[in-house]
Image: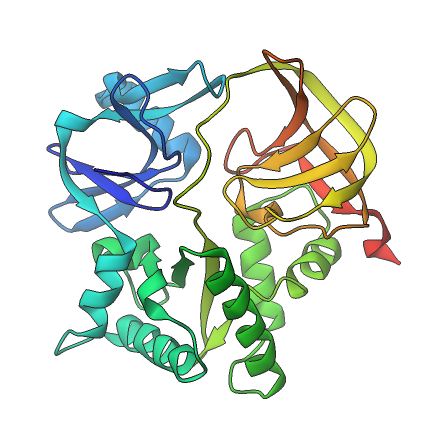
Length: 311
């Protein structure tokens, strides 16, 4: 079975992990702990909490990836009891006889986009909705599995915001999003970058995000970390700007590209723009160097910023 980024997997210990890479490593799924199911519901874990929880209770799920040269989590295929897949979950919600308020807003969003020509067979839902852990204030995390479908969805969001059928985020929504991201950009710079991506908006006052998953992503190339760097360079190719990881090809004598594993910097720049990048340099066996932004989910001290954004 293929495990895709943003799928969730569940173990016998009722641990729910988010898949973060599409290639198995030592017959293990590379992932990160996000929820622990308990008698009173599901508890969500942020990065540091998840690491500490596994260190104390299930250290065998901690993993060092020699391919990514990174510490993360991994689950052997034979220890997975449930594989939660966004496509199947979305279809189940769309065809269910009853829906809660979060599912109702998801259905309304999907029907609206479908009415304007979006092919929902290439879409799914991830996050809390994927495992039924949504609460009254939960966001909607929609995913698209074809680049063309995703870009069309972004265009629809832009048009529907302009028509006021969907709403742009309010000031408090942006503040909440900024606080959750805990990124190394000023609030003004964060909002400037986000507002032009058109991958998030409000429906019935509820925030939703749209992301792209490429099921045909190339196998991972082994990289070795070489140290931190901050530089400025021009983006010469933004084809994979919304992929996971997002990639921006650079016009630089020594660095081929910058890649980001955190959603904060997905779609951050477009071809022709000059960016300032702070991250970790990695090099593969062919000597090709790249900068990684997002060595952790929060990516403290790492960023991608378009230089003219403050003008």
